[in-house]
Image (cartoon, rainbow, N blue to C red; front, top):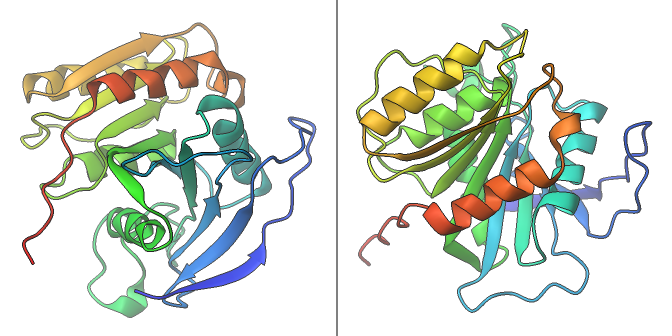
Length: 252
């Protein structure tokens, strides 16, 4: 798989955050395909790779690659993980129907990109750039991105070993696959956009299928940026202790 490096992403300054960016950030096209893109972040200044490689956060925001999504992802990476991590912000492959995160595999390549497959392609591309610790590949997703994260987690073959999902949509009515998976779900009982009952149903079904699940709560409305603090950092630390075993490498 070949990746084309585009121009470095400019530092986003907004009313929400004006901190100096302490890491490189570069837009990537996978196989020069404009529909399969992500932003590669890191390593952080002074970072030292672990013996097994860097940890990797796969960031799946809610929106369609807007300035808000960029700022939120940069702040999650800057504030919520240590220097042993890289990060990749997956760009929404929104299709012509206006679906921000299309899940179902298109019948033809011309009809779009499957978000679930794109996540694995991003991981593969990062691995071709830096050595990645297979134990510490975590998906961090919120709101609409949560549905993508849950769907990735239910695949029989997947690279991520843990999932942090904030105020995310859980649309599955039944599941059978995630035995051994690890989920840190963060959701407010006051959420007026994504009902808290969806997080409770996710906890019940995933636990019943053999996964390790923590449902953490907070008080307040459906606002992601206010959560970019110790709560997300705590969730990532929980995943470090409870992640699933990485998949066995394919035989040569």
